[in-house]
Image 1 (cartoon, helix red, strand yellow):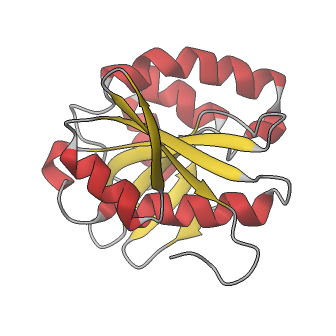
Image 2 (cartoon, helix red, strand yellow; image 1 turned 180 degrees about the vertical axis):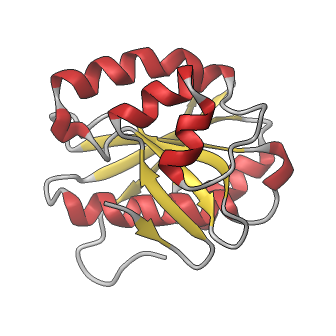
Length: 174
């Protein structure tokens, strides 16, 4: 399973890929068929991967509802990651997050990836009602991404803004 956009190849992070991120950069590059920056992944992703690996070991069908790797097709280079914090909850809600390598920011990559993942999620799970995201109030590039993919700010908690996009049952929201 892969998603293709105009410029990106989005690959769900499989169990072997997740292990390779932590242990074997060369194996990851071979698995992806792409160059991986020496300063990737972020500390946040490194901290999350052991939990993600455990989740995939217990629930192989969770693939797609976690980390996706973003490959810039024209360069054959990993430029970031995005994905969900798990399958939808009992309310029909799933949360999305994303990170683009600093050398590739401000090029619309995050918007392109998040848009593709939101579309995939709504197609994949007909009971998914809302997709949410969080970002710091001062993170203007992230705010721009969330607005661009059709999310609405629905509140805040301290310094964090809360965003949502509701499933559109008629015409797609772009």
